[in-house]
Image (cartoon, rainbow, N blue to C red):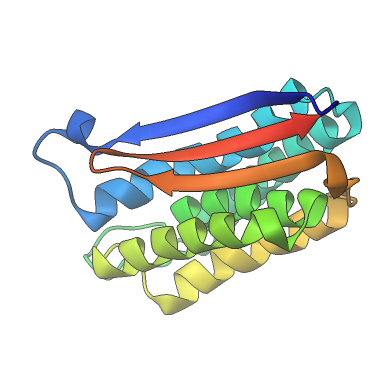
Length: 175
């Protein structure tokens, strides 16, 4: 007998953003949601090794990004500073790359689509150029591949859905 346990349902309500429903705001949400999902998923399914790998991936990506921003201090397209690498992009791709590397492409493709949208939203908002987001994505993917080992994906299943007001990412774990 199969036992399914819904381990995580993430809902991002666009109504909660009030009048700020823009690509930039969606990218802001994804840059928080993806690393959060990457860390919470292995904790919930009791994948202790995966939890350690997710934490190493997200924290190392963040540290490298922060340090490079301060050292390089490239001007932003909109006139600000600390453009390279894109922090939003590196955060989103750290979660996506971990999910793909640990649990496979079946789960990573949606996460990578969300991360790519985050990168696009940063360029679209004139906060970064293409090199900034490519730099952030490269750091995150390299870090994930450095720290993350594949998991037995036969026990984990992901569903992604959308209603009028929110997105749902549902992860099911079979015991």
